[in-house]
Amino acid sequence: MGGEQKPAYPDFVIIRKDSDDEYVVDILEPHDPTRIDNLGKARGFAEYARQNPGVGRIQLIRMAKDAVGHNRFKRLDMAMSAVRDKVAHAMTNDELDHIFDTDGFFMD
Image 1 (cartoon, rainbow, N blue to C red):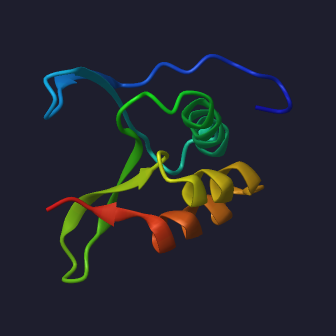
Image 2: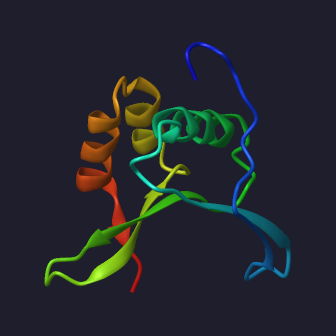
């Protein structure tokens, strides 16, 4: 924030077993899009995902309306390099909002 790196503490760190019975760590970060640290936090998680490809899911999560107008959790998957690149190059919260619109997904 403001050119200064600050620590981030994800809301959820989940340890699970995958189909090979190996442990996987997921990082899930629900975040209010109106907070001033929104873009910085997103960029930090994108860079963390780039540097740590062995981590399971690294997802930013926010509330959004689905196609029928219901409030649901929408996610950005930082494991996807295209998403990481867009987030890393975003300069404003409006750009991050647009990335959520174009690349975010609802889980079934």
